[in-house]
Length: 275
Image (cartoon, rainbow, N blue to C red; front, side, top):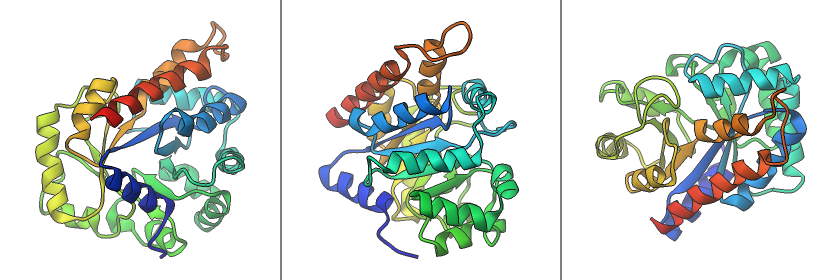
């Protein structure tokens, strides 16, 4: 595996600058392909350092209602894996530097075909994968082949990942570790910075990888508080909520959809840069 991916370059650059990364999550194709591409293409200019793109799935078990709803909107609009990879290709036409991570569940990858998916992801310009329901015990299934192709495979650690389990979680993880700051589903509760700090410090004793903190981060102040304990802050539900709130009664995007999402990203980025 190459050891100098876009993800690793970005975190190294931000470490040198002394600030945490803003990692933004939106679902591919939400609320439709054209609007999704406009949002994703605008994220770097608004201050996103790493972009996570959700692969829509009908049964996203780790996600709360906002991201579940975003996935259903995308699927209703015709989004599928082929179009998700095309979204990355279209993004890469104007941005060759911002790291892209595809995040989601194994089922759509399995249906598409593992080898085909990994090859197409690399060709599209994907840098990393987060597949939340593939455990370390199944690394031969997807993780090892992904690493062999130069993709970072990013794993989740949670408040319940104890010292016995942590080495297994970290074994083939690369790029960064995603620390789930609450127990439960995405967007369900607000993380407590002091609790998060204790857990992140324990993870950092076991790895040199950057640690990005996510789940439940809604406001610039929360992002700023959490940035003191990690190398990055992940915001997802708050962004897809912005998309949902901007749609008209028929569920179509309005003139404010892209603007409101990017304004929130800019405020989050500003908070991290002032931390």
